[in-house]
Amino acid sequence: MSLFTCEVSAEAEFPGTPETIWQLLTDHDRYPQWHPVVVRVEGELAAGARQTEVVRTASGRELTFHPVLTVVDPGRELSRAGRLLAPGLLDNKHSYLITDLGDGRVRVVQSERFTGLLAAFFHGRTARDTRARFATALANLAPLAAVGVTVAAASDQAAPVAQPAAGCVAG
Image (cartoon, rainbow, N blue to C red; front, side, top):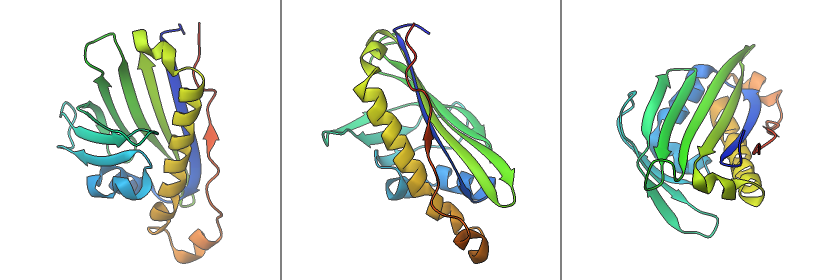
């Protein structure tokens, strides 16, 4: 990896099914209930469709992006790609990967890969803050996912353990 690439991810395992997670990830109205950054998501759920996403920065400022869905694979993966202003300045790919672990448990990985001239500024604190927000989103998603699991199975499981990845990799 080069200085102009930054990858950030977090993952969690918790009670749920791939179908339940998929329903939550594709229910635009529910994003603000579980994702600490997302204010609003709108758009068709189809590969190639442009979305409108409003996010709130750590400083409280709201930014609007228009990413394109690149992968819409129900129960497995939801990915989108976007950029800031012009190609090569700050491009990104954001993904949710869902793995069925069996026995009513799932693993969800939320990741983002930034590339371009401004990606160099994502190393360090920004990467740590982004990873922490991803971990919070997954922890908030867990109780919503458990609703689709039997009460006995859900009560046997504690809150998810988010495990952040190594973060930005610099060349």
